[in-house]
Length: 322
Ligand code: DGY
Image (cartoon, rainbow, N blue to C red):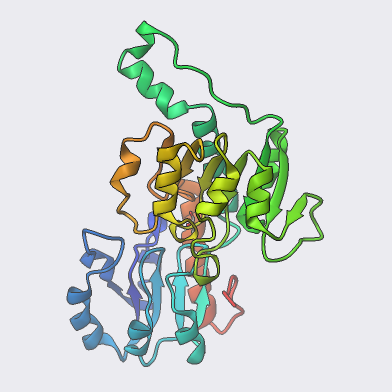
């Protein structure tokens, strides 16, 4: 009898059909809570109860809580594979206690997500979205939009110089920007200026780009003090996690002119975006599309499948979260 894969997510463009010969796929993503990225708790309880002995694998993505409760409900679970680089939605401790493997999709999405960061930086600094609306509503007929600010020669501080952050740095180099970074450790392979204090870095730079993981270690890292340090001509770009920023403090900073602008791909309670952002001209909003291209989502889907198959074929996992 085939074992079951509990699919909280459809695995993007690639889908899960190629796994049908190996697994009974329980497509829980068809029971999605329309108000969130998450599955519908009530609907799935029965499905899980009826299949709990057979379920050996879960696939999921950002925002879909793989909680201790869910992990403990599945006595034969062996692997959790997430279609994302971030894994802050998975209770790692609960998984590790039972030696359940956890895999993610790093590297294949780094360049794409870095591009999203640059798109937001250009969009905010050069007022791209504002300019588009300006033309469409006919305001140009009455005068010019006004000036943006340069990227060339400006200082950018990258929070988290990991897979994505280092690709952002490379792109900023190409834009002739002065790159520095903050993170828990100095990275000897890079010559960029290192800060072990994010507020000190924010004070020194023009633009702050968040690329770090989410989770408890970075929760509200960017608070009112950091925003104050970034200052009135500063721009904040967040391609990391909404949890990294104190969102009410950011709203206040944008309303009061404490910082100039923000480009946001991620929010504290996705897909709900605070209404205050909607009416701000100095904010560019994206619906968490950091890695959202056909090419990258296909590569992520393949990596997720390869990890699950490697596990059940007794091979080394390609990208295990440790
Ligand atoms: C991920 O995959 O964790 C990121 O959020 C990409 O944007």
